[in-house]
Image 1 (cartoon, one colour):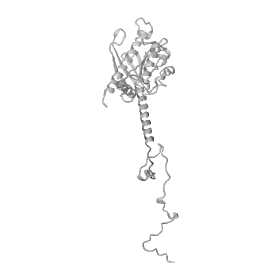
Image 2: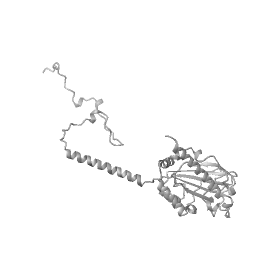
Image 3: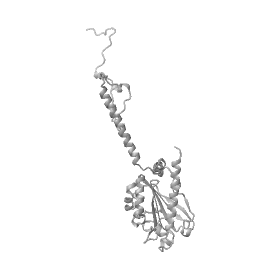
Image 4: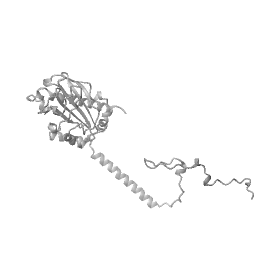
Length: 304
């Protein structure tokens, strides 16, 4: 039989057995983030469908439903605006947003200056000067707070905590100051502040903050049993809780710790009060809090 191909007629394509390996398709890989988006016109091409006859009544009904749906959505949004805290304007909301993330946006020396001037902060209006011993790495709250205090702060959550320990100019006292950045909104922070005030939670010894001891420094022996005076302040204009706890630098055990308001009383006779440790805790906490407020205000007013 003549196997010469006819002129103008192409030879038949090779069978499957002769398909080169270079044209074999690799197996499809799964898409971990959902279905892939079409990338070529071929993938977006669909079979044409016949055009249906329009029904004016159905079209009008659908339009009415759409308008009604938009009205319900708008009403829900309006209700949300009306039920939200009207006193918290754009600046307040921005302060919360900025304050919650400030822990990783602000240098440690801004939060905890290397030295703090305590003009008039000591007993009888005496001046104080505090030097930072060390600043702790940012951390969560579980390991840095007593369990009961952590549960008390639970309603506002814990985004992050920063701590530092200071000593006075005579190196006779040490004070740990901390800043807790919470997850709470304005309502939650106000509720927590009210609870601390009404129930006097800032005076309970079982809610004392923990210390931050630093090996090889004057604060090496500053542990739980060395806590002498403390303060806890819940801020409401920013999602922050500021605390401070003071003690003796010689690592002596304190059996009768006092909150700052009692330790600063002129008639207080405890060792902590006589040594001015209530003034140490309050003076340092106040200055760290003031600096934090200024920093957040500056960040809030900074143009984006």
